[in-house]
Length: 447
Image 1 (cartoon, rainbow, N blue to C red):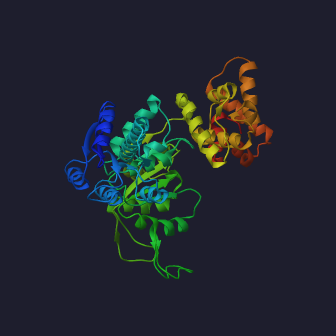
Image 2 (cartoon, rainbow, N blue to C red):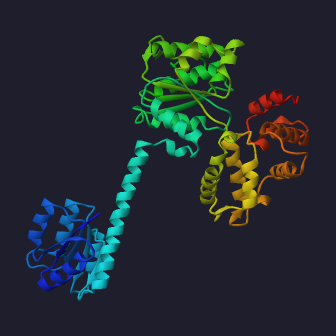
Image 3 (cartoon, one colour):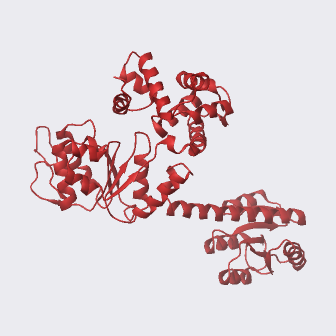
């Protein structure tokens, strides 16, 4: 990029010397001996860098500096003066000058200052470019990965986000369903409106009813004031219903009405409230199977399942593990104020070989623990959970090689046996919800 540079000095010899030196550096240079002629030219075609004499015959240098910044804040101004005044230098910097240099000027220093100003301009332009790129792809930056599987996921998110339809996100626990929902929202036309999340699991019908739909004053005992529900509060935006497979059947009926009619009634209310919201639902269950056994309404399934996004297990995209490790190491090094810069090769190999039943969330938990406990600048094998180290030893020294599924079964069995089948403790060690552990126990026949 060829930058435009101006020299404003009442000494013609100074203008000539600086012009020749800076032209040789590849800048486009113009020189002025009067402040007003420079400002007129600045208004016609702005300069990127200005070397400005503090004392000119017609205008004061600080006044010109203020005018430059009012015309174009991005212009970098370097003050030149024959008067060595600390007070003036401080005032110039406060008004936005990049640097301050006394006369007689040194050409080497002038070149260095011009280069420094150019680097600052280049960095600012690069930051602007990156911010624009992030703005146009915001949301996806939270999903870490560069594997073909993740690139396909990004492409699908970009395609579905602008279309105002319901989306069903399916994936195992810890695969990043909430991140995908937020990415869809951020890339949609609703990005400037609320994103409201609600977990449908573990709540009674009454609580879900009140939280989602709100209630009128006096609707039940203790309802001393009207309350806006989450669906209503998301007006114009996106509602993310996590663990939709756990929603009670009675609430499924009410949600179906919302999707069909795009309106709600508050609990105890008689006046319909129109809604302009997008629904993104997520589940780690097979909803088709849930429909077959009568645990989920078929009509609601079809309403939610306009577009399905299936998230891969971490074990299915192992090439992303190094990127995730670096991301989580940097994240928790900053959070814990520690200088942990990487992972030792042996520890990396252990983490690359592990099956991750808890997916990305489990990996994050492992790294968070390791960064918190390590006394070194790199995470070593001794910083990893004991069970993970033992699993690696068994994999290398045991009775041959096994599939990832078999290694997962063996590891879960070992954790269950070591905790005397205390599922709460076992789930905490594994870094997965108890519901996930329960399904794994059934799948592997470990009852």
